[in-house]
Image (cartoon, rainbow, N blue to C red; front, side):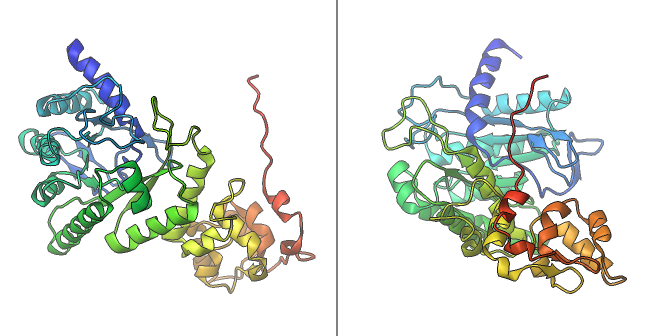
Length: 404
């Protein structure tokens, strides 16, 4: 690899670090076979640690950080004074294959600034994926960031070669998007999401390949004055209307020579974490946005405790629940009980009345769940859910770690 390519890689890999929507869950297993190259597993490829501790990686870069747009929150905006670079299609293909053969990566995440035109940019990214697949038999994971303003035909072509497409909405409201990113249009972005969703559904019905790992988007948190409630309302709409696989939340990071309309300080990172937890409740635990938001104040989530516990503490009259009789919906609302633990409880109680000892084997979160449960041999003494200090009893105080 020559020095010029290494320099480009340093610039464009660093420029891509602000995009959070690069996980690859949902990709179907695929192997290049004897004549091809690479593979992807059901667990997917992402630059992160999986729940079982494996580190999976991908080449995460921009095709270029040159951009015609001037989004005020973006480090690569037109008016930004940053070092610029641009890969050719051939260079991205060379890097991907080279890193894969050296066992450094398992796939590619490719985004880009807008160069020449949206169509030209989308075509270049599509050509990277097509060249890898068709000319080199690459069967690893490919995630392409789509350009909403590009031709629908080009976006559909991209979906034929990529495992996942993502279209970043960036901000939760059309008002904020118009103020901070005047060249972008929320209606256009959502129209493309709808188009991609239709093709994904059609492909599944016809058993053909089109973005098999679905589509995702990213919302920047803390750049505008949107509350957590409004952020989650936007996410809920995206899941319901466009079948998104994931919404990613990225805490706003102050950038050099920033516009005066942007906040000087970033939001607490814990806010991003709470939104991810709330998003999980929204998708898998049957909570509504209103219920999640009610656990906090003024439309903002409680930063000191997770959203499920916050809701439970404000709805104490619904607890404790009997693990031997309660339905799945209510058990999912018990702090400390995850979906897998609830399913194990429902399965086990068909054969026996569950005791606290049994629950300890079925769930690792029994300490937090205990005040909210009734078991065959246990009933909270003295109305634990009525205790004024219940929150303090359940929340482990933070402590300073020692280096020695």
